[in-house]
Image (tube, rainbow, N blue to C red; front, top):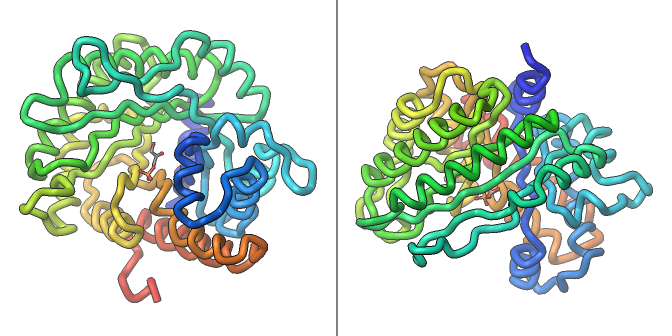
Length: 335
Ligand code: 13P
């Protein structure tokens, strides 16, 4: 087994998942202002450090995706944040793309940037303690989108990113996110997501990426937010597995879903149903941002010094999702 394969398997072992705490300062500012907390570097760190020192970091969270600001901050005990995460038994990771920009010649679509100085930034992040990375491509669904151009150019960028990350001995998380926004059906989501993921792996293979050292971070197959044809959790699970079975090469060790605007319990329930149906050899776990942090952030905003109370809320969500990744979750456990 390669070193990269070992890292990927360790992050996702025994139902563990990933905490996506890599919101850019702009996104984090919006989240904090929504709960009336000023977005200062100190407050951003305080909330994140509260989560990173919670007991579920040892039991449930195999990896944490950080943002550039956070990986360079120091904890209350003067440890670096990657040191704190490692000390808790988890693995530090880092978001390395620099965001999605308008795609030239298809202005309603996006291309993710950040390749130019990536090799040097990766070396720095490795020295800071990162052992895995994330890059997110984003696609919207409509009759004509995602276009061949968006599918091809984002897959190309994801492949070049992955090759550079592995060269630096880190595991790339490959995140092609097909957004929930719109009135498309789940069937449309299935067709477009499958096309997007297949193209990503075509490019990864072309770029000689070691697929045993990759984690895929896809969306689940859902009807659009404004669709009037919502599907049940069981159907979500069935279509999601169908999509992944037909588009992900079997060398890939693990899949960690994004939550993408689902409610916390919805994201947990769907993950549980996916694992109850899972007839593939892929580990299916979570890499949630909002679905792991929403309640904790709300609770914390009422008293930012209530570390213990905030951790309790976070621990519950982490525990529920790890049970879902083991297909052992049920609604009753939520109370
Ligand atoms: P959500 O789970 O909130 O969709 O965030 C995951 C993520 O990392 C998006 O890039």
